Amino acid sequence: TPLHGFLAALPKCEHHLHLEGTLEPELLFQLAAKNNITLPASKDAAFASIASLKDRYQRFQNLDDFLGYYYIAMSALLDAGDFEALAYAYFAKAASQNVRHAEVFFDPQAHTERGVAFATVVAGFKRAQARATADFGITTELIMCLLKHLPLAEAMSTFAQARDGGYFKDGTLAAIGMDSSELPFPPPMWRDLYDAAAAAGIRRTVHAGEEGPASYMTQALDILNAQRIDHGIRAFLDGDEALVARLAREGTLLTACPLSNIKLQCISSMKEFPLRKMLDAGVRFSINSDDPAYFGGYILENYCALQETFGLSVREWEGIAKGAVQGSWCADERKAEIL
Ligand code: HPA
Ligand code: ZN
Image (tube, rainbow, N blue to C red; front, side):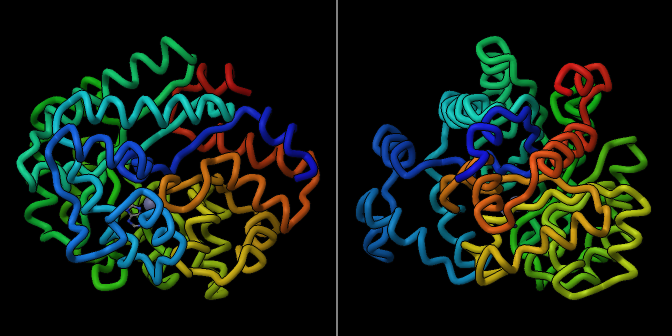
């Protein structure tokens, strides 16, 4: 790619990255062997080998098709060391691509549901965060995502456990988000959760406008009072001009993930990614990798794939990277260091 060296050197921030989505098939098979976990190869031949699994990752039909693999694979994560190894490998990779600050998601319910304690998951991630900052100077924050395919009551109790355990007050957790299947679970279902987070002074983001319509994004703003929207491309694909104008006016950060959108068939090619519309409308956004072990690229590959298609100028890229720094939830002093 022209500008590859420039894009690699740009100081970057990542805001949409699922730590469980960084589980590369190599590490998956290694952890499954260590933990005596049998991947369901008798039900799905894709689990027979690293190669067949990687091949299957090339052909996701939609979000739910991907999520099936994502939840099975993460069942190989058991002890704190597993979570530490997973997160440290991502932080090392991100730092190598000049990510200076990353705000990353994890899905506690996907682990507590199968008997892994919340404290185990968080302890592993915290060790990885401390080592990565010491080794690479990267700063990181954890965003706890609740799962939309589980009942509101379970999201509420997971949230209450984290809040009452002091995880937000002591800075272990920076915010809440929601992820997993989108279309059957529109934002109004989660009002009580987001009200409780706001009442506790906790930052809030939510996946919306990935497979779901632009109206879900409006609901995320109006009903959930979300301060950030993860994905959000449907505002542009649906041509919702009022919503686009509002996003620009309110400075809401969209955490966009172009390679993810292609792999999950939200768009059929990079040409359909609404980058020009996002820039022209003056909407704040960042470019992110989502689940890089599944979607064929980390943050730099997302920047480069956009550049191949859209051929932006150096100034435009500098503006995008700067907007990502400014849209971060780190302290102003840290932003100034990165910029
Ligand atoms: N969308 C919804 N849920 C997810 C995603 C995503 O892109 N990645 C991991 N869980
Ligand atoms: Zn995501």
